[in-house]
Each structure stands twice: as structure tokens, then as C-alpha cells.
Length: 426
Image (cartoon, rainbow, N blue to C red; front, side, top):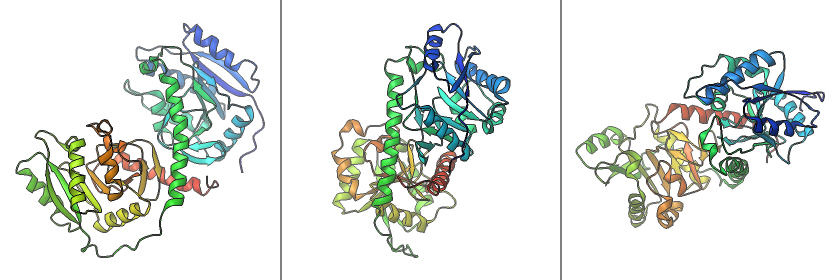
């Protein structure tokens, strides 16, 4: 049950560079006649690095104007209300966010990493960008004021990183109006770029919801997992550009792991890591696997390393679990990830993967990869992600990767489990 808050006037602090009179005129029109807001324009701090100026302005607003407020709205001068906005929706969302002990409530992110249902029109997210209309709650004030900020930082990413209770409203009640220039984000100067960001972000909420529904209803009955995996072995294609180091690598990583049958696969000289797995190499491996009547194969690069806590029974168990959900591809680790949905405590659907050095491919995905146009599986950092849609990532990883990414996945799963107990299924 959401907290009952009285309909009150919400303090709004609007950031505007004084010489940007076109923006000031726009934003004042947005709030004209909206009696639920008490809006004040704050002159933005100027800095040679625009993001630093924005950060200093936000810190100034919190410390000098908002410390006595339980919450306030930070508003940038390119904010624009959408047709979905209503005072009732905003107040209801603020009340729910207070019940959830929120740090932030965003009116419409231009990008987010995951969306976990937290209530009617409310979603928790792990990371987001787009501060153009954001409710800051008292819980966040100290975290932001105490956070260090360097010239390579970006204000919305930094705020997202130092806070935990981050929520947004969907359908979005706020987007950014494009003025053809940006004082902070140069890429926003491109015509149509800003509108496209919010369109994709809104569509991604629907995608996450659909994916969550799909996996909640599609899993086959659990398969028995053998206690002894000595009889289970999977052909493992080890990519290498040649040279004597292959035997050292293979012996060091696979010698004591009977669940793997290492198979040397030569790639072009000079190629390393996932750069070896271009379209031609991938299709040739799958063609070979089909000839050998393989149901599951593993492809790994010479950069792959098993973590110290690696367990063969864990890997086999998760392969069977992924197969139960109809997986076509399962990644053993990653240095970074795109859009993410937790499927179980160890399996996550991901939209994109960066630097996977250990990839499990299921027979159900072979033909799709073989039929994929060459431009969909070229030498890019996440080309595998474009080949198949039913793709998953293991966590804990079985291939040493970025520990921060692993921690993020655990946080997403914990939040999704927590929210599932609080809201009705989609």
C-alpha cells in the first residue's frame, strides 16, 4: 500500500545557462499553469567541461536550496512533458517511491540497463541516463554531495552510480526537447538523435516486460542433474592463431576437467581473443559441429581462464537449466553487458555482450547463425549478440571477466527477487 501524501506544491529547480534564453522561454512554458509545481530557475555554473558545470550546479541546488525539502524535482531546461503526464500519476509515483525508500524517481530515462516492475507504472533500474525531470529524495542528498567528480565523469551516470534506489515512471512523463545543440552532450547535437534515444528507451521497457513474461511461462520441467559429471563431455573449440603456446594453454586450463574435449581451431595469424571469431570462423565451426552431430559446443579463445572457484557440476547444471529455457547461446562471462533481465539466480538474458571468451552454443541456434547475413556477424565487440535472440549469461562466471559486471548482475537479481514479492506478476 502506497504512502498517502497530501497533494502539495512540489519544489522544482530548473537549471538554465542565462544566455540560453530560448531554453528558458521553453521551460517556463512547460510549467505555465501547472499549479502543482513551485518552479525556480537556477543559473547554471559554467565550466570548460560542461558535465562538471552541471555537477556543480546540482550540488549547489542540493546544499543551498533543497536541504530542508523531503524531496524536490531537478529539472533541466530541455525537459518536455509528454501526453502521459498527469499530477495524479506523479503524486502516486512519488508516494510509491517513498514507500520503496527511493533515492531517485526519474520521469523518463534516455537509457537504462534494466527495468524491474516495482508497482503501477513504476520500475526500478540499476543504471540510467537522462536527468531532465528527476525527483531527488532526501536519502540521496548526502550521497551526491560526498561523491568525487572528475572531468571524465558524466553527471547522470555518476548520480546513478552513487545511489541504489533508482526508479522511473513508464509510460514516460518526460522527454528532452532538442534545440539542435547541447551544452553537455555533444552527440545530442545530431538531428533526431535525442528523440531516438527516448523512443528506444521506451521500447526497451516493453522488451524487458515481454522477455520476463516469456521466461516465466516457457521453461520446460527441470531435468535431473547427475552428481557425477565424469560421463558428460562437450566438444570445446579452442581458437588460436598458431604457435606452441596452445599446448600450454590447453594443458593449463583443461587438463583436469574431463567435461571438456578440447579441439584446436586455427584462426588467422595476429588475431587474439574474440577478434578471432569472425563470421567465417563461426560459420565454419558450426558447419563442422553439424557434421559431427553435436548438440552443444563450446567456443573459447586463448584469453579464457577458469576462475579459482570453477565447478564442473555448476557448469553442467546451468547448461541443462539454460536448455530448459530454450537457450540458443550461453555466455560464460563478459566484461560489460547491455539490457539485462534476470531469469534465475544464475541465468540472465542479455541484449549485448562485450568480450565473451567462453561461449556455449546450442543446436537450436546453429541454423540461424549459418543463415545470418554477414553484416550481422562481423568483427565487432558484440557481434554474437546480433546472431540470436534467446541468449543468456551465466553468473557466477565460469570465465574470468570483469568482477564489477558480475556484481551488477547479482544486484539486479536481488532487486528483481525483492520486487517480485511486492508486485503482481505482469
